[in-house]
Image 1 (cartoon, rainbow, N blue to C red):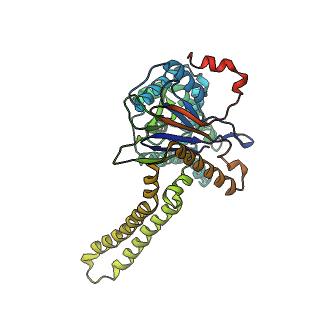
Image 2: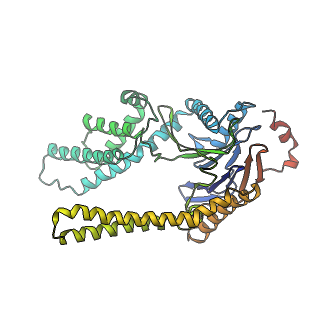
Image 3: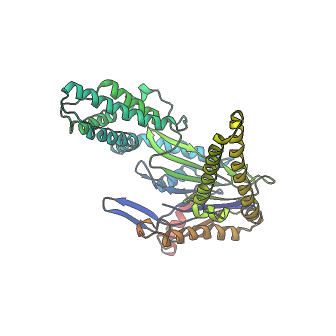
Length: 434
């Protein structure tokens, strides 16, 4: 895991990142504290990139992809940070066809596994609770079909409720044709698990079609639910006077096309948004500092107020003499609860968040860097002293800090090196030779 915090005003963009990386294996988790998460995206221009969550994409270290892209970019620049982001994604997509078939296969299995593992477990649980005493083999098979189809429908209903996008613009037939071998392997795997309970059982084609429909439905779910890599692009494009940051989430590659979610840009607009603090990963501590209240407490408070006022409304309604006014009274009471939440939120912003952002709008570069670093350090301290499992101390190690300005460009305030620059004079000589 990672803690990355960005701080921006009209003068600069400051960003800090910890060095912890969590490696999960068969024997548990191990945390290392020497990972690099912030990089220059251009050797000459004021633009950078930060990484969180998975440090690999289809087995390729994202650090390697960044440096390959930087070499390709050379002296070229773009007018906006969004254009840098889009060009980087275009480059990333060119790497997918060259990834080994084994890596892409495992990536697809892991993606589909988000649906077929729970549906298989549900089916097996239904079979376990099924009493087949006295039933003919054909009757038992009918029940198995029903259990499996019901489990698919349950998973489908979950994905039906999620927002959709257009990450993978492929038809169902194109999807099935491209992943035919993997889909058949998944089908055989599921059938094998069901045969442990009924050795002669075969999945029907209608059930297989429903399963493939479920997988096809998943590829354009907007939420990146699979293992993902988070990328933060930040700095100044040639045409941008104030700092801008864009964030994307990269998931699995389906039909050799990565599932990429583009988050909204965060930028400075004088008079409207003069400053901001943006936590990109492990956000709770930064949001607590920004709002004065732990985000979990805010969520619990709001849901408690809503449910309490709803209970009051439902309790009063039967006592009303005039039943025709019941709906109006219930709505009125619920609106009072929502108004209370709105007033608390307004007080929180005016008394805590607003003053902090007002001060931040006038901060100098050095103070912005210190603020970003401090927020990462506070997150590290909380993880260290609130978890009894050292494997959960997922923020730590040296904190790298960068400040980017329009005039001075990408400036390291604090940076760890895995080598001594004094002992490697050739590195500096080679750096700007692209």
